[in-house]
Image (cartoon, rainbow, N blue to C red; front, side, top):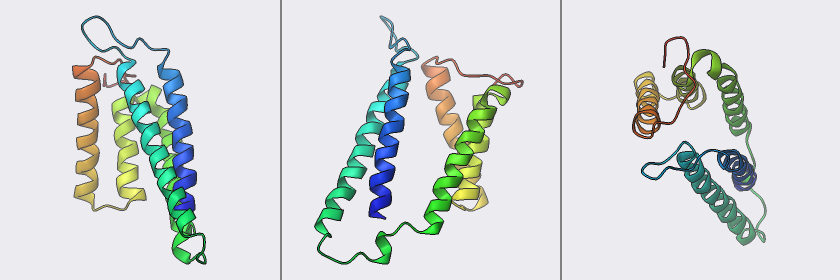
Length: 156
């Protein structure tokens, strides 16, 4: 698990860095309100910091265990690889359908896939978490911050 945390943390930091690079081209804010670049910049900065914290913590733990023999808990298991692969696949599918369906339905389908398919949460919990997350994202970014999002045929 430690190797997975190091690799995953560094990959996530790289991904957040790419998002930060792209978000820097958006208008950060106006005189009275945050602009469309405000949220992606700060989410990216926080994501980079947390990803590096995860990787650094795992590296520190690996160094402290260097004198011990590596046990099975440190190895990346097949279940973990499947979950990572399924999540990346779901993300790729979501990104490919977001322009056709709109952000809200595409995000909802992706979150249902993550909660029910990848994490195997109970149906009420998975649907509730997905609906709650989509409502939260919509309220914060679209309603309060006025961030433009791709809208599908349903207008959402």
